[in-house]
Length: 238
Image (cartoon, rainbow, N blue to C red; front, side, top):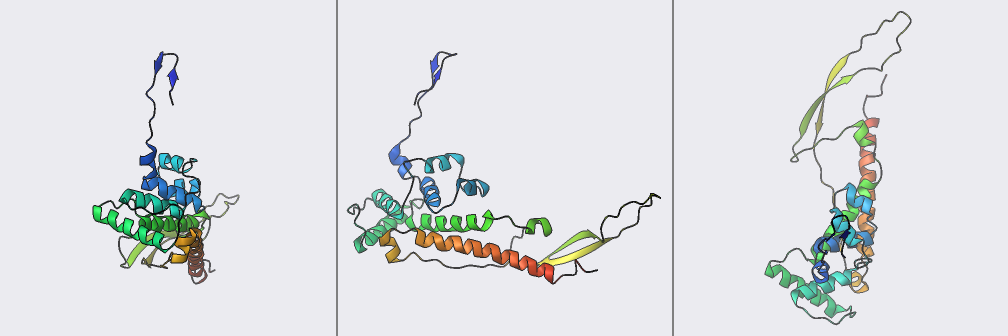
């Protein structure tokens, strides 16, 4: 596509895109598969999963509706492994494994069928986990930890609430109390499998549906744990 700058009377250089190179771009493939798994562009931008250029390419007609079989054949092509198009059977799975092993042995680790599918499942889970609004940042705040050791935090807290100033203009005294909290990271996990049947059926939804469900379950578990902390605390006692 040529752009004309009439005021300067000059032509700009055309943007040239190599389709073969684009078809092997792992980030674009991953983003396209995420879109097929109902991860929205808003999810991608919120969690900074991909840059804008990658999202735009993934949304183009060339990558729309990207399926597992297309990734499998892209992997085979990159590895120089031939398999008849559309023949999704046990020999197709064997060809996928052979192609992936050849690419790993050659040092090409970006275009990896299991790697990309794992990333898609993880991003689908993350999108489902962070999509709904949580009350936790407003009630508890956010902090970070570098390992799983217990960490103590200290903060000042005010007792009671602000009170209306009466006609005499008197302002009543409040108190500040230093409170300490102990916290530690914990890990929760669930392993997902993509079976031979799912591979032959070209059913990426079998993987991403469960990932999305786990993300929603993780969100509910975190909210429930926070509610338990509030229910067992004395912060609302009189």
